[in-house]
Structure formats: C-alpha cells, structure tokens
Image 1 (cartoon, helix red, strand yellow):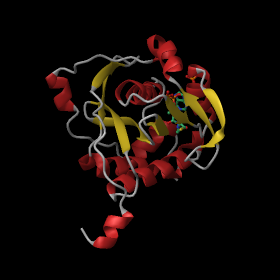
Image 2 (tube, protein in one colour):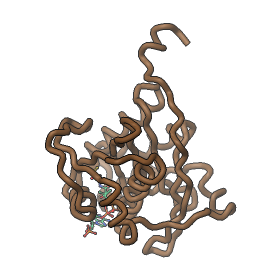
Image 3 (cartoon, rainbow, N blue to C red):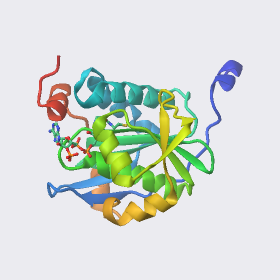
Image 4 (cartoon, rainbow, N blue to C red):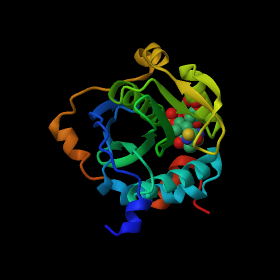
Amino acid sequence: MAQLEEILRPPERELPPYPPKFIFLASGEKMVVRQASREDIPALLRAVRPLTEVERDFYDIVAARTYAELLGWQRYRVRDEYCLVGLIDGLLVGLVNGRSLSPRVGVSYHTIAMRRGVRVGAHLFASKMEYHIEHLGQKEVYVVAESPIGFRRWMIEYGLEKRPQVHHELGGVMSWALTPELYFAAKERLVVGERPVPQDLMDTAAEITVLEEEVLVRQVTGRKVR
Ligand SMILES: CC(C)(COP(=O)(O)OP(=O)(O)OC[C@H]1O[C@@H](n2cnc3c(N)ncnc32)[C@H](O)[C@@H]1OP(=O)(O)O)[C@@H](O)C(=O)NCCC(=O)NCCS
C-alpha cells in the first residue's frame, strides 16, 4: 500500500461476527438477517442510490448518508463499520449499519426498509441493537432518528435515554442511548428470530439481488421515480 494511503486509512479491525438468523414476517415470508461482507457493497450501493431522491418519509437524507457510509467502508474511510442485511429469497428488503466507537460504546447509523408494512425496519434495528449489546458487549449504543417514523420506532418503542451532552456523529444532533438494561427489558417484545438458519435457507441468502429502481421506489412510496 502506498505510504500516504496508509495514513488516510483508519486501521482495519475484524469485528466479532453477527450470527445469522431468520424471522417470520407478518406476511408469512422468511427474512434472513445476516452480516454483509465487503463483496456485497456494490449491490447495497445500487439499492440505496435511487432512494436518495425519495423525499417521502426522509428516505433521501437517510439513503444519502447510508450511501456515503457504505462507500466509506468500501474505500476504507470509516473505522469499524458493519452492516446487516434483511433478505427474502436473496432479495434485499432492508439494511442497517453502524460502527463500534470503543469496546464500551456503539454508534447506530441508519436503518432503511425497502419493503414497507411488515416491520422489516423494526426487526433490522432490533438485530443491530442485539449485535451491539449481545455480541459486541457494549454498554451504550448512541442512536438518533432522522424521521418521525424512526423516532416512534426507536426512542418510543425502546424508551431510549437522552444523552444531551453527546453530539451524534450524524450531524451533531443530540444522542439517545440504548443500554443493556433497556435492551433486555425490550428483548422479549421486540427482538425476534430463530437460529441456526437451515442451510437451504442460508443458501438463498448467499447472493444479494436488488429490485429494479422503479419498482423499489414505488414500493417505498407508492409513486413513480421522478
Ligand atoms: C423507519 C423505517 C426503517 C421503519 O421501517 P418499518 O419498521 O419496516 O416500518 P414501515 O416503514 O413499513 O412502516 C412505518 C409506518 O409507515 C406506514 N406505512 C406502512 N406501509 C407503508 C407504505 N407502503 N407506504 C407508506 N407508509 C407505509 C405505516 O403507517 C407504519 O406505521 P406504524 O408505525 O403505525 O406501523 C422505515 O420507515 C424507513 O426506512 N424510513 C425511511 C428511512 C428512515 O427514516 N430511517 C430511520 C431513521 S435512522
């Protein structure tokens, strides 16, 4: 690696793996939740890009930031980032990402549901809280909401605690925190899924497919792309 590139790159650290699970959605479909790998990034970027133009429900700002974060991961410009994906028969229906700030503290970045109405986003957010608390063993996860739906789903449903002194990485707005106490109090109600994932189901989630742009935008908005 060139000498300057070595300076520009944050050190790369292997984070503990997220054990995959599957969730029965209200639709009856099975959604596999698994960790995304570097090889998945191009497909994720392709899925997120069209949503950067969707103003409805703040998909635009969330998608634009998520795009930058995923690109930052691909181009080695973010430290200790991870991404979990929700897949139905290999089709990407949502994703969540975040990063590890320290052994004690996690930072929640974004949640995007590409299929609406069956709590895909809520289940994926729960999976990332599970990752921070149960697998990374962190004592606090800093969370913000960029949309009213996000506020209902995270701050209200989990009863997150305010951390007025913490400016979140996402724009410096006030952070809210999930602690192990809040997580375990909510776990039975909000964190679902079964393990292990049977091999035949896991095989369907090996390669990520992405909906066509028009179909994806219609699916999250009910409208055609601009
Ligand atoms: C926030 C988000 C992840 C939640 O995902 P989810 O749990 O799967 O929930 P949905 O988006 O399907 O539904 C949320 C609400 O939208 C409404 N909704 C459901 N289906 C919808 C559809 N097809 N079109 C529009 N609205 C719909 C419902 O009224 C639902 O209300 P509820 O909270 O009373 O259940 C998702 O709405 C999303 O990706 N929003 C854009 C990005 C964002 O705000 N991310 C979070 C900020 S970090």
